[in-house]
Image 1 (cartoon, helix red, strand yellow):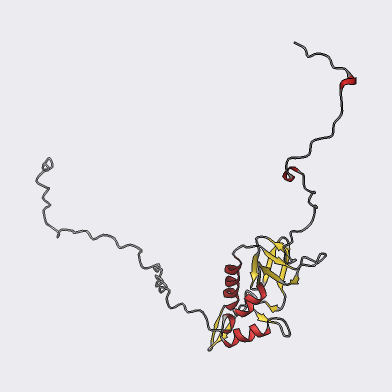
Image 2: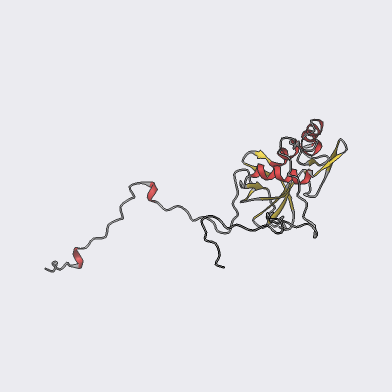
Length: 211
C-alpha cells in the first residue's frame, strides 16, 4: 500500500536537534607528520638499542647522551694490575637499564641523524645521571654530572672498580686431548683364542659337524 502523497507546501524545515552529550562531538583532527613528544619536551625513541654505555640507536637516530664520555665497547680497564673488559660490562649494564623502554631525548628538529648529543630521560629519570652515578660512564669536565662522577670514582663503582667476581661460577671443564694418528680412537675388543692343538668342542645344544 503506497503512502499518501505529500504537498510541498505542507513540509517545514526545522533546526537539527542538539547532541545528547559532548562525547558525540568529533574532536579536532590530529596534526600529521609530527614526532611523538612527551610532557618533558623530548622526542620519544622507541625500542632503543644500546650500542655502548651512553650511545643509543633508535628510530634512525644515533644519540650520545650529553654530559658524559661514553664507554666504548672495546674499552678495557685496569684495577690492581688486572685488566678486564669494562666496555662490554658497561654496555650490558646499560642494556639492562633500558630494557627496551622508550627514551625521550631532546633531539634538535633538523639535526643530522648520524650522531647527536642530547639530554635523555626515561620518565623522570635522567639517563646521564644514572650512567655516571653507577660508574658506567665518565662525566665530562664542567658538565652537570661532575659531582656524581666524583662519588662513583671514590666508591669504585662500575668502570672505576675491580673486575666482576666470577668465583661463584662453576669451573670450566678440562679439555680432552684429541687422539693422535698412531693411537686408535677405540680399542678392539679382546678375543680369547685357544692354544694351538686344542680341539674345539661345540656347545652341547648344537649337533657335531658331519664327518
